[in-house]
Image (cartoon, rainbow, N blue to C red; front, side, top):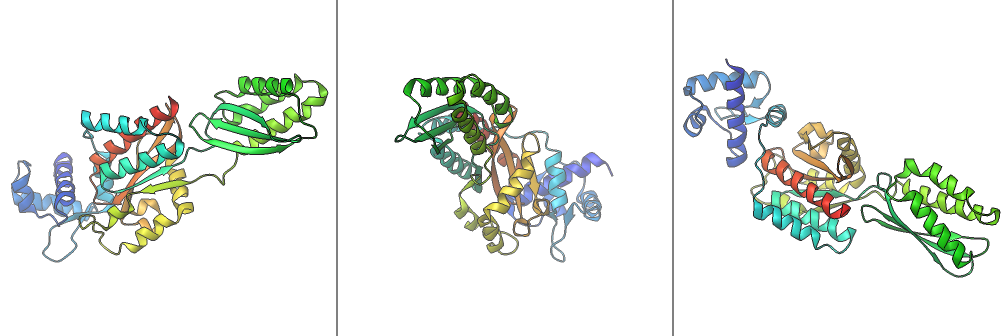
Length: 338
């Protein structure tokens, strides 16, 4: 049996099963696809695919359906991903560019991806640890307190209050603001320490403690893990008749509610470059055993700060989902780094 023909048969089974949600038989494959061989030859190919664990027979005398292993081979051998149309791309760019702040753009990205795929969209907020500084603002609040406003290059805004021994004068505050912004602009957590230490040394002794305290506060804020969170959109899509999971829907919904666990999965997938696909049991989460998760990083080019993804049944339209996730991630990056 030709390996290429076997892949063609598997590809046809996946495409038909995604389309019809019914087990696929050899005669149907011969009628719908130009495989160039007889139904008998297709049956032999299907038997070999089943023996290798790529397809399975759910019921006696029924056709075959893909297994997780079969979907994995299908995804790994995808040669083309159907591109979004020009109107779809323009709609994505326009919709995201109208966002008023980070919360709005994250929510819009989620709703948009859920609508494009008909599945659940998950958007991870930009990580503070992976974000760079865009601006640092210092605002006196009373005689002995400073409001420190930290704005990242992904649009996150964090506010912290710093207790000071004595309120600095306006000139000192302006110099602190200017020097810290100059050394910190665009830099991430790992790059800030040395620059901040040098800034502190540039001030008179009575102001060095304040400069060090501000530097420490910024570094501690950017290193926080407690702020990591995700937004889900389109959860109601799971209840659509066409979605239909092989078993119960409830475990899937319960898994989606466990945001800490879901964040762990996204963190693992963030280590993979480009678009990442976890199929069925590859998620290693019991509740998501009948789902596939497709993610892509967004942020600065080649240096993502968070993930956006789509979650649906293993019987999903992989080329379409991959194209949608990739496109929304690309436009989300443009909006946040503009």
